[in-house]
Structures are given as C-alpha cells and as structure tokens.
Length: 301
Image 1 (cartoon, rainbow, N blue to C red):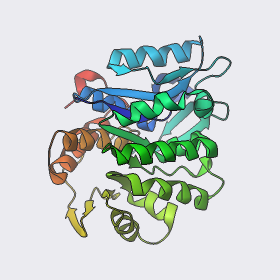
Image 2 (image 1 turned 135 degrees about the vertical axis):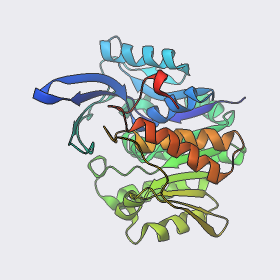
Image 3 (image 1 turned 180 degrees about the horizontal axis):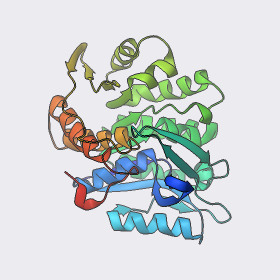
Image 4 (image 1 turned 120 degrees about the horizontal axis):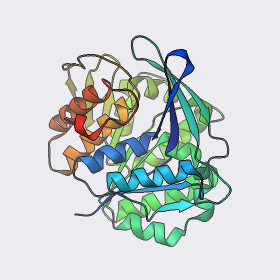
C-alpha cells in the first residue's frame, strides 16, 4: 500500500474549562485527519515543521510515533516553536478559537525542506492531502512551489485531497484565500468543503461554488450545517439528507477533519462516495461527543 502524505500544521491545543483551567493536547486540521486516517488502517506521513528540543515539539513527535505517523517529512527548526491555539466552548459545544502562531515553525517549512525529496515523496504517494490552512501558513513562496509539486504528482496519477477550511485571520482578504484555493482545485480528485466556508471564500451559494469546482473534475463533498451532504461529481449532484447526529455534542472541534478522515479512508478502500460519506458521518458523530479534536483510541467507532 502506498502511503498518504498530509501537509500542514500541528499546534498546541489548549482547551479552556471552568474557572479558566486548561487541558493541553496537540492538533491541527490536516494533522487531525492524518491521525484518523492512520487509525483507520492507512499508512500516513505528515509533512510539517516543528521546533527543536522544546517540550511541545517533542510531544508532537511523540504523538506522531504513538499514532504510527511517519515523520521523515517533518522538519526540526531550531529557534522556532509550534503554534498554539485555545478553545473556548459554549453550552452547546460550539467553539471560539484564539491563536498564537505568527512565528510557528511550519511557516518556514519551504525554506528548509529539500524540494527534490518532497517531490519524490509526493510522486510515490497514494494521496496528498492539504487544506486552506496549509496554504496560508506556508506563505506565497511555499504556495508557488507546492503548486508545482501537486501538478507533477497529479500528472503521475497521485490523488490530491483538499479542504479549503477558510480561516479569515490567516489571509489578507478573501480574494487572496480564494485565489490560493482555486489554484489547487484543478489538481484535486477529492474536495471536502463546508457550505459556510464555500460561501465566505467565493461568494454566491455553496451549491454554485461546489458545482464550479466539480467542473474541473473533482469529486466535491459539500457539508451543510444541518448535516445535509451533497456529492458533486460528473455533472450530477447527489444529496444525502441529514443522518443521525451525535447523542450529545460536547465539542465540535475536529468534526470536519474527522469526517474527512473517514470519507477518504473509505474512498481509498474502494467504497462508493455515498458509503464514504456515511463513514465520515459515523466518525464525526463520535468525535463531537468528546472534548478536543482527537478522541481517545478506545472511543473510535
């Protein structure tokens, strides 16, 4: 089995509880997806940068080892630290984020990575997965090189997966984020996007955005807030009505990331798009019943 390469950022996650107490974990959108893909039986490597010998970078590398995620594409950058984010949750489990990531090590990834080694790794992959956050944190120069590598990998038959995951504070404006996303879309086999992200990123309706992206040849999975999921592919739209949700929503952090892990693992194993959506839904329904983005292994469905 060829491996999946996920590219992005793993951060220190501080979950705020009552009285201001915090619980430290480690997470990030593509990292969360990578963990769930590994737990679902795929071989996974994570392309990122962490700090040198600080306790947070060590903990991230230890977590990768514990989850069976290869670190040969993970760089250590002395003098830098991982980014940090804090989560505040309301009574319904909805969250608000606070970030400290301006000097995060991953921002210099493409300043230090050996481009030929990364090109070779991409060309041998089963899937390369990234997000809008990935595009934001690697910067303009990183995006230019990444675009070349994705084009070459796609030309060699490698599947490209993408979640636009629009975070306005990471971009100068929506136009910059839209341009970066739409530069990647033509290379993609799989695109998973929330309806609100599609509308905020591109304007117009989420359905129109998904149809436009699917016209490039991608299978676009549009996830709406009412848990409706629409599959846009081959000029058609297949709408799946909301299925059973979580018994109790504790924290919606990681819902989309875990959906992506379940969906991609199923698709790569030969499942239909409909069955893959249901696999993603089952996993996400469990994840939102736990605090934090990555649930205990014993809780995996």
